[in-house]
Amino acid sequence: MRVFKELGKYSSLLYQGLRSSTEFSTYRKNLFQELVKVGYDSVPIIILVGIFTGSVMTLQSAYQLESAFIPLSTIGAIVSQSILIELAAVISGLVLAGKVGARVATELGTMRVSEQIDALESMGFNSVSFLVVPRVLAGILMFPVIYIVASVCGLAGGVAAGYFSGQVPPADFLEGARMYFYPWDVAFGMVKSFVFGFIITSIACYKGYFATGGAEGVGNSTTQATVLGCIYILLADFVLAALLL
Amino acid sequence: MIEIKNLKKSFGDLLVWEGVSFTIEEGDITAIIGRSGCGKSVLLKHINALLTPDEGEIIIDEKNIFDLDYVDKRLLRQKFGVLFQGSALFDSINTFENVAFPLRYFTNQNEEEIHENVMRALRYVNLENAAQQETAELSGGMRKRVGLARAIILEPKYIMYDEPTSGLDPQTADEINGLILDMASQFDVTSIVVTHDMHSVLEVADKVAFLDQQKLSWFGTIDEMKQSNQKDLVNFITASEYQIKQ
Image (cartoon, rainbow over the protein chains, first blue to last red):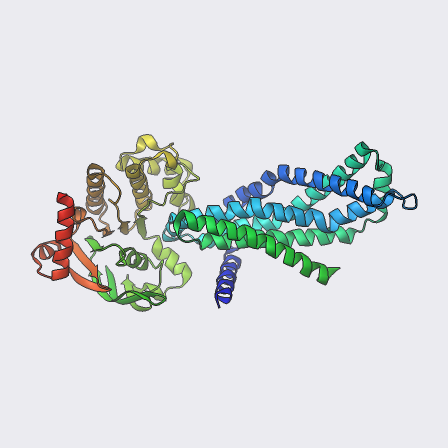
């Protein structure tokens, strides 16, 4: 019963957000701030995650495929495919569920328990338009960009790890990556990151917007936003793979 | 004039109050008093339609505010200035920007006009020197005064104060009471003060609404309250006086 109630509240918040999305003048300033916070501020951690993911994938693939009968370009093909189809979107999503999801839930939760959201409403603001819409839009718009950054860094990390370990020359790596490159893989990764951006920010907004009970309540809403964000990313990953691949 | 008619509110199975009816006259300062948890702030949030009752209506400008659509409710709320219990200042922006906030979104004033109006409001609450301070650096009393400056910046018709003196030392509480009286007389606003501070009630209120035992237990002028024999009201006042003496 509680699940349906929560789902109803979540859907209602999204509906209000959708209706309020026409009030661009209300959230314009916040949208630009959020684009920076969600996108630009996440770049360092995404570069780090991307490089290490690509590097480790390359070293492990080289270890597993060590055979005179398997060309080295296969490693480039496996790593690039894995990064573009799965890892760049999912690992970035999981990392950002912590970074972005937690921040959004904490911000809105604190605003809720300190009556700042009531203050906005009592001034005549549409608080959903002012707070929720720009955050969700920033997630939807920036996650595909983050996916591209993660992909490029993952591939660069793979090339670098192969070269410095002496196991895969860059030319072989890139030959394999090129040979098995399909534009649809990138499109699929972009679609996934778009969905993940929506999931993370909308759940975090929902948990924060309806937070109750002071500091402990804000803590709980942040934890729930992060955990639910991760769970729904994995579920959405499965559903999208089943539907689109 | 605000007419509250037969209001009832519950949260789930918990009845907050029912049958609440009284009228707040133009220009009056009406205090809503009662014990902690009796639903004073809940009633306040009904008056500007932040909450919706289970039954009853509130008539403002001859319209039941609960029949208004969301856009009209937002327009109605712009007639209200609200000072929240914890001041509800936006902690991501400084004092000046907190007060300027409604002007930036609801008026077409240029930067010069905004600056002039914000500084006037801050001067009014004796905080012109704190304009550039971060809100986290402000004391409780200063936060209340910034909240008050923000509440009056759009020159509202009604001002609602939620526990304006709670958590303040007596001297600062007196300053806030003085500001409530000034607001009412200088700007000719209708004021609603939610409080359990009887000292504040005696100092500022014209009329008093006493919430007790899930209903409006008593309503009348401040002079009538002083002479009332109503048992619950007398008990409440006596307990408050005892606390003040303590």
